[in-house]
Amino acid sequence: MSCTEARFSFELYPPRTERAAAALPGTIDRLAAARPDFISVTYGAGGSSRTASLDVLRYILEHTDVSAMAHLTCVGSSHQEAHRLIRDFLDAGVRRFLAVRGDPPADLPEGDDGIGDIRTTAELVQLIHRVQAERVPYGELLVPELQAQAVLEHREHVQIAVAAFPNGHPSSHSVSQDIDALLAKQAAGANLGITQLFFHAEDYLHFAQRAAEAGVTFPILPGIMPVTSPARLKRMLELSGEDLPSDLAIELEVEPTDEGRREIGIAWAARLGQRLLEGGAPGLHLYTFNQHEAVLSVLDRIGALPAATPAASTRASSTTPPKPATAKEPA
Ligand code: FAD
Image (cartoon, rainbow, N blue to C red; front, side, top):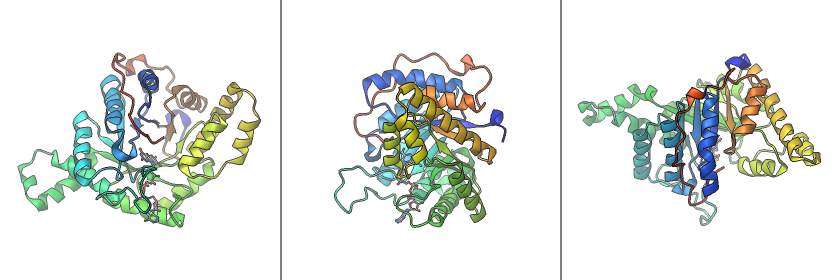
């Protein structure tokens, strides 16, 4: 794919402080002006950021022309709560979801995985389709056999992404197991994959090829981010369970200035993004860490940004920014 035609999307998380909450609308406006396919918003395990996620999603939907993707987790919600939450998101205008198991809260007793009565991500995918189908105003939905039919018929009304792990999920025994998990989610109605962070283009390209050969038909977006400091690299490795990319780590460690480290991170991500697109990736999903400058610089360097930043793609800035989350958030 040519870089000028490349599709891209961004990930944000709900703000954790008043200061971050005040800065977020400006960041969203700048990201929206780049005309991404969508902006996704993470969802905290334990239900802590339910309102905070919805506030950010609402801001995107009400103040920009960009589509918003809501992350949802199995962890932290009963079936009934998840049902209500999905309905709230749909009522707010969300039509894209990312269904994941979720990271369990750190303070759980030993042996408790935090999973309630939605045991697998595939079940969560199915539940999203079911809630979407229930909104269809057909009297015949009262007939159980026709409900199942409606779920199948109305699948295309929502996009449901799922997580993919080019280097294997930390708890899986082999990449084949991860691909089998993707196939189960595809059968449940997932229609997009988004990968965990990784550092080498070959990791993604081999994985995407193996997944396609095994029968995964939906596109898999590579998730990348510009890592602009050793501290951020360390944090990302903790969250993702990925192995340390020693060349990048050394470059960041020996560089004495913040400006130099920023340049290393942006140049690294731009090279990675370019190789991925040249290798056939369907687009790029950029983890922003709620900052627009570095990800927009990456896209600019690979020639993926629209020529003129269209001021028209954002509407008036809100005077009521999303509220900060009150408890632990995912990254
Ligand atoms: P699953 O599909 O259940 O499992 C992942 C892998 O683990 C599978 O591929 C399979 O190989 C293996 N596996 C599953 N079950 C078992 C088992 N019983 N035994 C052995 N192996 C098993 N977390 C949040 O809390 N909030 C978010 O907003 C969020 N957003 C994310 C966005 C992206 C793009 C990614 C990549 C991750 C995100 N996460 C988020 C983290 C995610 O919740 C964790 O990585 C979680 O551990 C995996 O979720 P999953 O849906 O892929 O899980």
